[in-house]
Length: 129
Image (cartoon, rainbow, N blue to C red; front, side, top):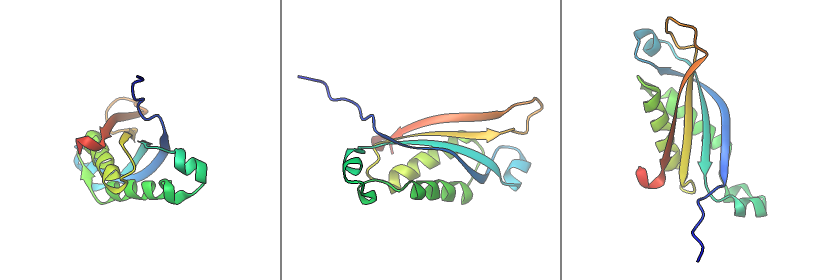
């Protein structure tokens, strides 16, 4: 008897940039700054692939809109909190998704050394929300 394989199908959205208030410093909470987000949604894509019917899958425009709303309508002190909020929202809105991976990046954070970005990566499955 073969073991069940983990789901390898993913809908991926990379480089989504949203203005949001993320950070512990007062300036970070008063002025929205660009936050970059990469998302991988694990789900079965075979049926939508066979039928070419968006109704059997997930419209990535709706995924982007859900991320945008989450980041614009909330403020976060930590990147970890922003990533968790995004992952939870995507699992709540899209029942076909079994697991979500989120990377949230803050380009050029206000620290006294040159830094391209700071980021966190978080994975959350449906049974964890």
